[in-house]
Image 1 (cartoon, helix red, strand yellow):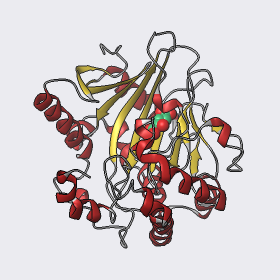
Image 2 (cartoon, helix red, strand yellow; image 1 turned 180 degrees about the horizontal axis):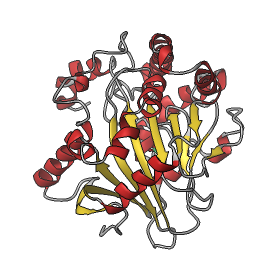
Image 3 (cartoon, rainbow, N blue to C red; image 1 turned 120 degrees about the horizontal axis):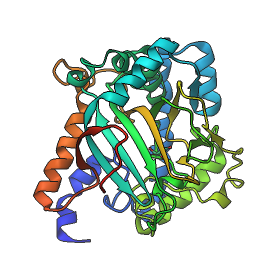
Image 4 (cartoon, rainbow, N blue to C red; image 1 turned 30 degrees about the vertical axis):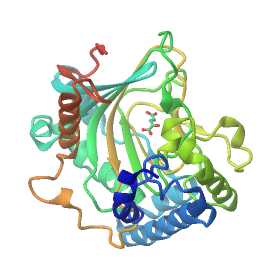
Length: 345
Ligand SMILES: O=C(O)CCC(=O)C(=O)O
């Protein structure tokens, strides 16, 4: 172990009580000896128990039917969310507004993130209605088991399977992290099955004996895993291991426009491989907090002045990193553009 790592040991130890997940960056989380003694399995089991307890306190945010759907599948799908008038108003806003946008190229896909802080939503009443509406907000909160303020973007996924670039890493089944965490997509337009729909393995948000055995095995090897994202704690599930975990066929969300999908992305999910160039337009939310908090509320991002601004703060931090490093980091400023303008990256 290097001297710098020894000095940082108190920090690494404190991280065990947080959502820190990287097996290659934290030598305690990645320690084979500690994981043989059950560290990872204990963290993941305790995180599930705490999330269940917080979620019970947030039961008022979901109907009995939604709670059952979540418990069974790990996601809630709502078709025909908006009236025809609200849907066409929203599409008009998206198609005619110029937004500050950040592009994240990953293999042969570019994901465009457009933050939607109060300043932007103030001019877009139809979009604001979706973002502030109960199905979007409450779905994220119930699934994430947190009454926190979600990160919200207008989210454009542009794929080009014909390009010479490597595969998009989101197309491998993965669990975002070791505990419940929620993502939502409100799809504005129909999604064709050949255009890389969001895909989810129903029931994979829960710990089973098979899943815990698999997690234990991964925890012993993850710190040196050749897949960097796996080593950082976002475990990849090879297709040939689905049967071993007793998982059913994945659900592909090739859905009509006007559909909201909220998913617990601790469960295994992927962006299906796109068979043709495609553009997917969605309003996206994400909510993740420290899995070991006993309470569901008390989120600093709910404070006046901060509410709704996490996405803007996130991209500002990416811009700062780009300036400090002198080279672009993951998210690159794409200019003030129309949402579906081709990416220059
Ligand atoms: O865009 C998608 O369909 C899925 C993206 C994904 O896998 C993720 O956000 O973790």
